[in-house]
Length: 352
Image 1 (cartoon, rainbow, N blue to C red):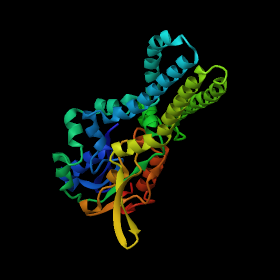
Image 2: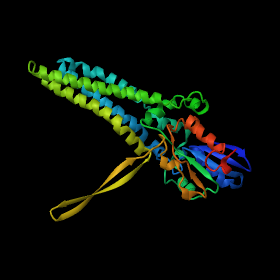
Image 3: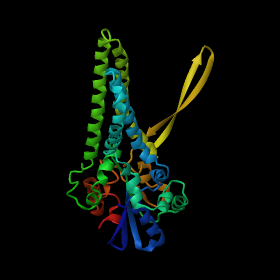
Image 4: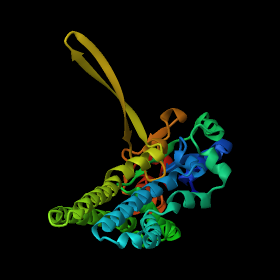
């Protein structure tokens, strides 16, 4: 997954690094500058990767656990509603449903996968490497203090929503994604993970709708069987719980993922107030997520231009590419072909 490739073009070597391979390329240039003609990086955490620090506090797993925990609460709310609706079932249902809830936890975790970030990265790095990649570490400070003395072209990749599910799906076929162009010829292999999560979220919304309908039915039935009014309230709570879980997946999961990756900025908003002749200002701070490839934020993939004598940013990010598939994605191959064939970005340096 993490590679650095080189090829001899003209009088020097062009180093091509994907992800951490980009940092390897910078190290090679630092130690063998006379032999290096230029560097091309893609998805490289030039400013560090905050998510690697989460390997030590479970932050990545907390995303999946948050979804699974919300789903568990929703199931428990459904059980409670059923117990209110069918007198007597409460003596046997709660005990037997625990196995079902544990099974649901695994089902909810399946399209997202705890190993998506924690497991996959832990398999590829030792603990010291992960610690070194945390922004502000001794290693990151050391590499940030150096200047790259050759032209360096940095490509940044980004994917759309629900990247956690996309990344998890890609881990199931990662070696082939990196080596076999036919596996992801259309560039949409990761949509399998997206579709799984979309289907699951649709189910959550459907269950919420069913509970809402039953709540209405129970409210009407309560005029004949008063105990059903309590059942109606329980079903309304269950409906709200299921819709809340779906709402988090729709609106909260991507936000929390971006924050986990450090791919965000904070805007300050000053609001002016006035009451009669009295004026005052209140200040609020809003966290705004930024694009990322699921593991590294755009802000880290692009090397600060002050860190090199000739830092070149690609005009736009490579869209539709998550971190697990970017090494061999059609969109990245197209960009690299253009560069190495002298059709874009400093052809005198990077042309074959």
